Length: 545
Image 1: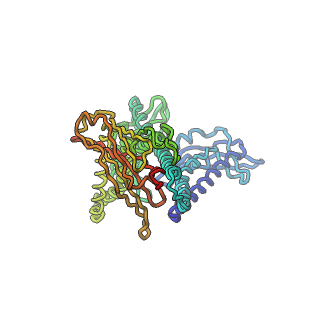
Image 2: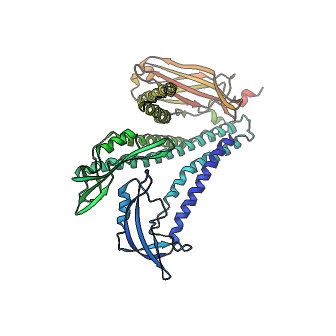
Image 3: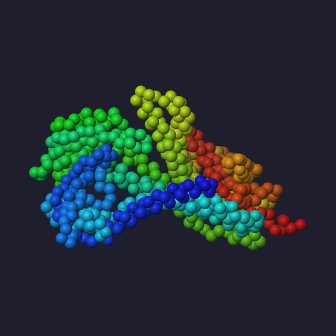
């Protein structure tokens, strides 16, 4: 485990150092002295890079100590782009013959830039820092877990360690939820909100004649093979000036298969006349197509991460917020054997739905990559039959997970049970009173069953693998009724056997007690909730002879 987490730590550290170094290099430009300069020429040039073929070309001159220098760099950051408009907007800010200032490297006088940009790349450092946190935190957790564990059976040490473990897990859940919400929110803005907003605004844009200057299928190598994209460069006239653009839609340009890219190029052959749509308030903004196509549905995918993050964050915050003071931890005080305690389910309906969505999305995203490769090979006339047969069980599991999402979603509308126990901290050999009630349409429940269950957990190593077994050692039926009036609300009492084991948690073993509630609903997902309870050891009076 140390080696495993060390790999995460090393990878994250290497990328973190590289990104910080690049951010420092870009930040240094802000401290270069400003010098007056003259723009000699500006425009957009095409470079030999099909993934980002356009970049602003600005030629400027400046003078230092009576000596003339010329340079072409706009900024230290990457200036090439796949969007012709972005390169044109950058060049239009520096018209030929205009006077401005540039920043000159004090150590190399023929090294200058027109602008000092914010080191945006520095914000990317948060992604490798996730690997650093996982690696460093994992190593810390591994070695801390190897420290000597206090095996005392006192209620204070056992329950305190258990609560600390749960709090760490809930804080980790909160962090993951915030990360998912942030990533989902940012992607939703760029892939859903902005494209759809611009698409709606383009409804009022003016239809304008245009000429196709160039129509090319661009290709470049990626980790997944060769990517293709149709690049259609068109020219139109607005407000007495000729403009050039390559925007075809408002969805960010993405790669596609060769056949799709070729079809688009055939639709807009070079030299042909067509129409585009131009913003009447800003002639620099135009598009060839303003219709709503299936590609815009891709923008819905980040909503999965956003909703999952919001759900995890809400569940974690609710779990971390104490609803009432915990009962006193003393083994001897009688207050631990009195009072009433309202139980919370181990997982609420939102957490279940979010968890199922995350698992289904991750599983189908990974399987989908291989399915796309299999489909691509089949359409290209070279089917990989072994891969297709191999993927069948994984695809079936993915379909079952999608069904599970809908099933869990329907179950979220079920009546929700509410359990209260007395005493708040029951002990072995004592009686436990359980009261139940429901929120929602309880009349849908046809039968109700409540069972007190005890489980023993054991973690052990088998070779190089770690296994955890969970086996029930106690199952006591408290309620099994079908009367509508009794299901709505009621109470029961059960004696906790004193010859069983109390709750405890250690590094490799543990005993858990819970109340399992099952409500049968015809032709609908059943009510199934688990409420964890903590059973205390025998009282001192029972232990003493």
